[in-house]
Length: 130
Image (cartoon, rainbow, N blue to C red):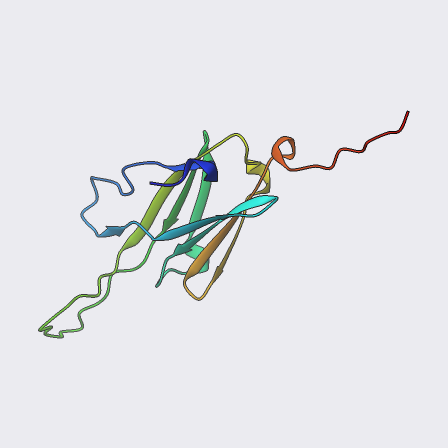
């Protein structure tokens, strides 16, 4: 379970129950900086132009389809590597500005930047002398 201080909570289930293909829940790290949260998701085998990141009704969903591996007539003695789609959803608090969410994908790692709303960012209060 995610720490409540991250302002993001996980939604379940992470995969569609009606699908016959494999679907994986990507591992994520969620970190907090002064002005944003950022989410790092491990999605090996995905292609940047196929990854969908959607935000609707306070829920951020990551879906990364990965084509199933072709057996090419191989006879596996042991097969531990699986391939399938990645899907994970998070409920995002109102303290995040959804219009500023950005994403980047490098070497199988998806990074989402979730900027904090102006109302919750730390600010300096000027003190006036009377």
